Image (cartoon, rainbow, N blue to C red):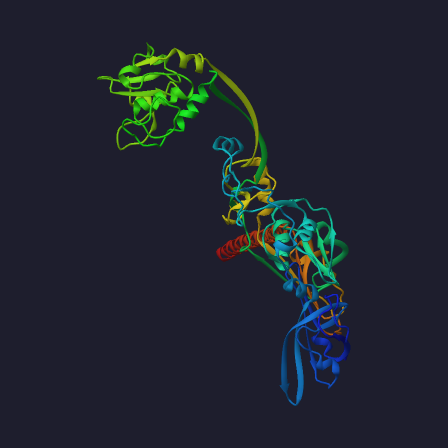
Length: 577
């Protein structure tokens, strides 16, 4: 029997239980570990009930040390047959158990600020920088939970941003990763974070060693250790397969979004009246607005309140120490006539016949009046209700000053942050792949670094799966050591196939002396082309061999026919004699 260590609970919490027991009833040939890159890392075994404490500790979420790594029990299946009680156990590597239960809430663990401003994430889709500037600022002062916030991060930055480990789990990073644009204001489980890493860095490999989760570049993970796998020499069985369902070779390409601060200078002009007390006259007159029309109301006094039209203008004049007539019939004689274009603050406008009505100008465009019984004092546009003539009182003209104006210009520089696209979306397909396999379109692809159309095509090609998935499963002799990430040289002499392939999965029996482990190999997309080339070469050889055989057979038939004819001729001559 094989001794396995069973531990109460999982080992990843900092306060994990330490109670352990040794399980000696696990069947060696049943202890299996399966691993598939960025997907599966689990184990199985069958144990019989020997009445031990360790067998009794086979419960879900307890841990078992297998081949130097801790696995957490996820499924149990008791089996009662022939008087012997057994237990089939399925386990996940401890890092998968931790990952499935750890969740990041951006409100607590994420580090991002809106800086008082948000931006509409859809506003600049498909717009170039010049188009965004022409359209105007896409920013707003209101925040929104739906607004995407992005940062430029590498895998370490992603882990540091989303995950705050409160466990014995650690992370290590192997190789140089570039930075990608990552949406940071989202709630993610750690399994989601792993997917975020492998989807943005498509060749990255996540592989744990004990309680350390290693994140590798492809070049760091896949290493050539000089392993050779020759069919019928190192392995008795090989299975080859390739699958076109994963091909992608066409998509609409979306530009990454850029942001830039644009400075604009705005010049504002304002025309002001330079008269000495014109503003005072206007301000006092405006205080009368809203008071009702009162026939024969107070007039010729410093007064604010309801009165009639002639009382209104006489009271305004009186406030500034100027005495004029108390009715329209006398007020029309308290100055000299002026043209419409000369009208300024304090000038009086009269309406015939009579005159029966008077108003006072606030400036060249507006005037104030008490209209008629039942209405209130108001300010109106002169062009809408033109007086028949205007007069100017010399004392009021001296008070408000000469109607000279000046223009004041003020320049103001504003900085606006805009978001824009380097290029508008466009359809792209890798024609070489399309010609070979047909079109396999995928969803819109938002690029991370491309700033030109040519760069966009190159980045898309690096993200496409331009060829079928190719895999080879090799069966080894029992006890053969298989190393994750090994690069092996595979040879199948019968078809002339020879190339290097990456080990991307395995099934091993670490305690068995009879079970044969298997390794799954895969590599870059050219391997399928290598394989096809080997097959084609074999077919070409077969065709040439068959052609040679046909040529030889034809020559033999011709020789036999010729000999038969010769024998026939010889027999005829002999018979004739």
